[in-house]
Length: 102
Image: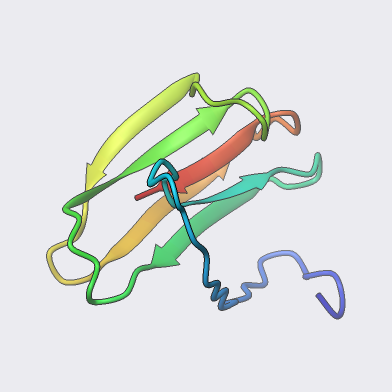
């Protein structure tokens, strides 16, 4: 980012990648590891209209290299949008990784 965000400031970013999974084993996700000063975080991923899934997962992992979540919740998509959301993440632990998987 060009500068640090101010308290309460929101920033929308677009990430586009072309990737190949030759073995068809990878699962898409968006994840973060929190900095100690992060107090309240919302993760939101807008998926393309062509996405046909009906739910997504919220996961907490011990670290960014873990494969097995210590917390997992399956959430149905809102019928009006294909948006995966995790609002109000607080008391984040810097060593943990927080993910939205679809």
